[in-house]
Length: 498
Image 1 (tube, helix red, strand yellow):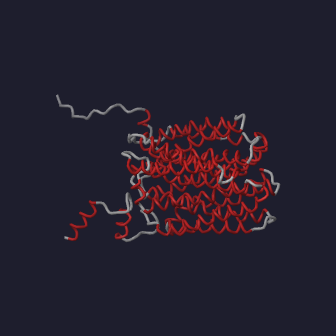
Image 2 (image 1 turned 135 degrees about the vertical axis):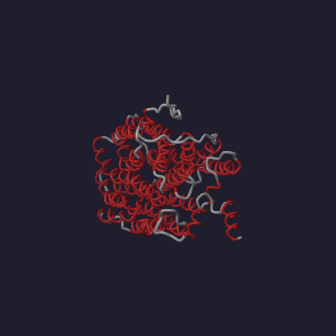
Image 3 (image 1 turned 30 degrees about the vertical axis):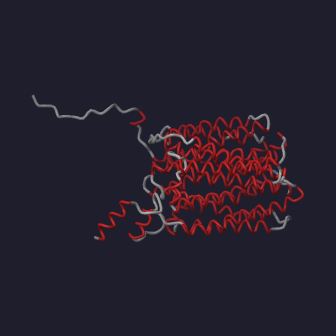
């Protein structure tokens, strides 16, 4: 009898393991997640007057409808990035989408302004989990840097489509009822969860949760935002405003101390030894100050001072948003040809120029002219967001992708939240609305211009721009985790010198 060949026993495969993994499912899932996150951040601007007419409240109430979302989004992104690494991107993303859908339904059914703001807080918390996990899903599905950059560009297209469609769709839905702008998230979230079941499992990296860091981060951001919003109604010398700023300052100091001395910080400070990470964080902040602050300011201006309807206001934003959405799919290939740094700096300069010109326009300027000038700010979206995201992901090791994504997106949301808080304070007095609007736009332009100068310090990464000499590729590798060469690099260099 012939002996049977030896075989290695394998455990039976589950249905999920036998199912073929298609990266495009991951891409579409992440894109839909980014779509609803961006849609809810933008669409609410055109509905603010309708919300106030239905639920009441002054300028501070409207600011909290916007910042209730962005504040929790920003504050929890820090730990959400680490949570993505620890729970796995797929599981974290699924939980975030599920809670986001429930919170959207609660927003649509809110009986009062306080209930709406509370539901917006929950929305922001869920969005904080979704954002870094969606980026981490892309990093796992597309390990090749060039393909990853293109996937990130398509992922960003979800945000661009949301941004371009939100003003007009929001205007149309507001004609029916402002509550419908939140209800539309329910079917989109359901489709995202269905597609998520077809994506590959994500690795989990367990580590302790940084409770001190998370608590101090919430206090710092919450105190700063509360103080800026209340200052518009009560003045900066009001006791509660001063106390809020003091709490924010002390919480920030405690946060930095906890991150420097903690055993498991949610924001490892050595992450910022990478020049690209530091610059990307600043660029994300500056971009959102202008890109998020402009719709807030102009929506109030067009509806309150110029008497435009919600739909007409949305149409005025349409050229700005469509230009951004149309250019986004090509941003990765443009970056491959000219380099990410060129696109990022050019986008920031265009944004600054558009904001300055808008600030100098007379109060009776034709709305068509204002709509055309906002296109300059719209162009900044595809020129800045996809390439800076790709630079960030290519500048950190894979096991820190979620944490780096959380830091970057936190800087973006802090920029947006502070823009609404500060600009809303400047617009609180109806008699000085135009002066406040011009000052708001000039502040945003100044922030963009300063960051454009800082973007000159960005280092090229793998897959960015045309092929480079091997000598420069060594510089790129040293910037992958920190700005300094590793001990292994130095030993290798010593052997070669010998």
